[in-house]
Length: 352
Ligand SMILES: NC(=O)c1ccc[n+]([C@@H]2O[C@H](COP(=O)([O-])OP(=O)(O)OC[C@H]3O[C@@H](n4cnc5c(N)ncnc54)[C@H](OP(=O)(O)O)[C@@H]3O)[C@@H](O)[C@H]2O)c1
Image 1 (cartoon, protein in one colour):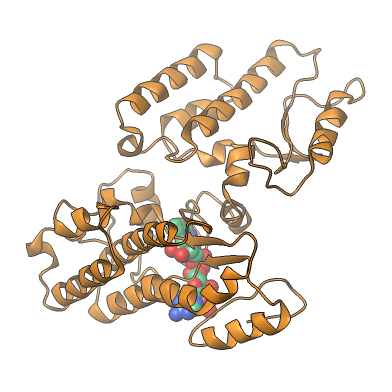
Image 2 (cartoon, rainbow, N blue to C red):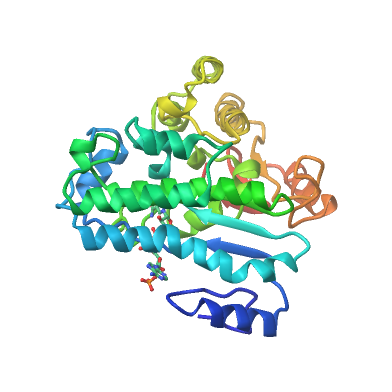
């Protein structure tokens, strides 16, 4: 779909060249490409999905995978994104600040691939090439067709095509980021979102998932608890009845310990990008709730000022510093008996 009244287009199926022409005619350039389209290639029982995401089971129980679905998954998730980029690269070059967001998935993380040559090649960021990625995908599909995924030992044997295609997309993201240093190119895991793909189970609404896709800016700025993966730190910080300053301190100490040991990702309970910012701000939010209870006569709130053009954001953002400061000042000047213990985004209350 491409609607000239909006400043975005949704690129689907085989119409990439048409969309490129449409964008060229109506907008003259392309500032942001979000590669969102994907399929999971598997049919999952929603309860099994929740148990797996919550780490209650080690492996996701799914219906048998089939080759046709695996092939379509690789075509959609990797080649679809790559071909869309290729169709739109010339228009991106015309932008002052071209940005590409490849919507990937945590399951595309290399930890989901068993040890072996595909993992090594995809992780070798200095030497990875598009040809090498595509050799991996060809070999994967060959092994899948021959029924030898498990025996080869180097492929994931559950949700295989989704994992391999998203790992390939991540590797492509790193190649493109090197190849086009003036572009801002990143991959993103939007979180566990209630959509058709997840049979409407998940931690986030589609709006919350899309908000994350907006840029790291919201993660950076809001750092709400929603940006922590499931796990004990999130549970403790969210347990508003029982949270204490000592518990917050324990979380921060453990976070720094895991960070030092390089085990943030493997622990699974820490954000793996902008980690310290997110954890420290989530801790500050939890402290806000403690202080509110401890000093009921004070008006104590937390605030996300919005995405503001400052040094921290390298002067990109939706708001000028004056606009960003406005909500801070308004909150500071709330009349007596105003609500306390809340989290605001500008003047709007949001959940912690
Ligand atoms: N939901 C989650 O928890 C979660 C977690 C991690 C990552 N993600 C990623 O987030 C992105 C969005 O997924 P979702 O959860 O919103 O899934 P979804 O509801 O199933 O949406 C997938 C979208 O991809 C489009 N699509 C699929 N095949 C396509 C093709 N061949 N050509 C063009 N468009 C195609 C679909 O279009 P139609 O509706 O027209 O078929 C649909 O709009 C995906 O990249 C997914 O891997 C999601």
